Length: 280
Image (cartoon, rainbow, N blue to C red; front, top):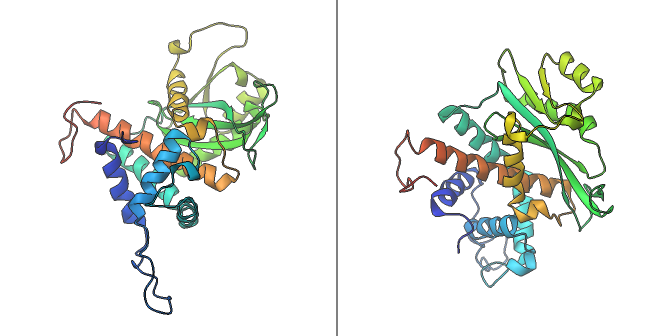
């Protein structure tokens, strides 16, 4: 069973391949002018998708077509080149151009996941008997398209991460005149309101002690996006120890989420080669 359907995997790979530098099939520095041929990038890309989706180890996913060391080496090379970050930004720009980002209503929320492997982003989780965990402070637009995130150990509070998360707005270009930030009751404080006022942002903050279904606000979109992220097992239970690798997997997941949403929303208004026969 494929990790992603072909109508989603193919456009992702085509754009990813366009960002890769040209590499010879054989190593020109080999003294005899011959060597084992280079593992195709498509094989490694598919392996990384499997690691992201299923959360398996590199050793478990390796086979005769590609070793675990090759997957990790190629992954690190692509991270150094910034390929994953570029892919995520290109997907976001395409969505904004075709569908349009809803920047009038933004939402920020924190989500704690497991990090049993430890590493730079691991910390004692306050909701899991102080087992190692990781927190992400996520920023999404009005439909739930991820715009960016701030990663931290699980014992960091949501409120101090809000300023760092709002700093991500600087990379989005011009914003609408009136922007509303939707937050849950964990941000209900004077410090949060002062922060939003200093940035000329309107805050829609749930009140502490007042019960209200999340569906009654604009904040349910970010809860759905957190669920989309956690469907990638590598993000819900992260064994990566380096921040750069975790960020790369999040960028790849964001690109998948954005392209999938783009195809779903453009299905009724656009026609293209390879378009799914029905709305997925």
